[in-house]
Length: 306
Image (tube, rainbow, N blue to C red; front, side):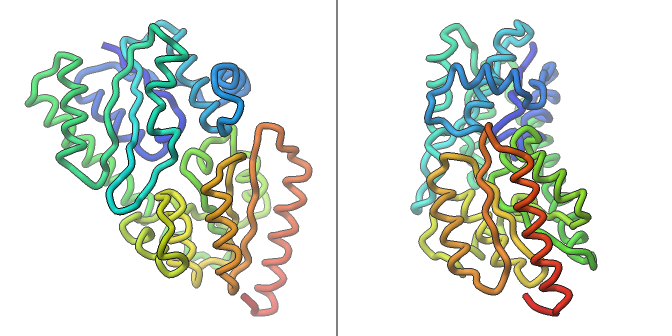
């Protein structure tokens, strides 16, 4: 049994969990390629014009797996509104339906992401295991092993971030959604420019979410988009340990537009700038903006300012 996993969207947050689970079940896991121009263009043809760049890329990843004919199933997790006013991008609510509409013959493995509810999330994995013909005991063991691997990976990411914050070099916090920050096709140019400038990069999504999410209250007690709470919370939690913040967003994300503008207006003691990425981004202009931002922060640090 071969399971295809699109290397896009929530893969950058839960990829280890998924790969470990299906591998422990004895399935072969096939990942799509890293996002590239052909993948993006094929996804853009299938997606609605108003979809954001990551959503179009995701359609391309699924398209490549679907037409490879190598996969018995393609994983397509989804999210739903949470209690307590928390919200997730609506693209994730109906992505399975969008994929079935775009590719009528596709065979999907679906489950609801419920990270804060162990039993509910296990139920989704158990249903996938049953669909694959695996025994309940094997599914339970595979799930527990996968969760342990994901927790260990998350702890390693957090610890690495904490060590980087001890550096004497210029430290820049990159905030944004994981599938924007870590997809090289979307943000690779930004990361390359910053690396060439010799700054230390830390990522908002690599810190412990159980710590950063509550910290967002200091900036906005009513912000209810989880990804934005994570980004804003990281700024609030670590603003005394970093020299500046680079917020990365993609056009036309409305929740990012609101949250980023709010953070820029409310955090007055830390240099913050916003870069909105799209498929037509000119690297020359991007490099000028980033270099200017880093130059300003460097001068402020030399003068002992924040």
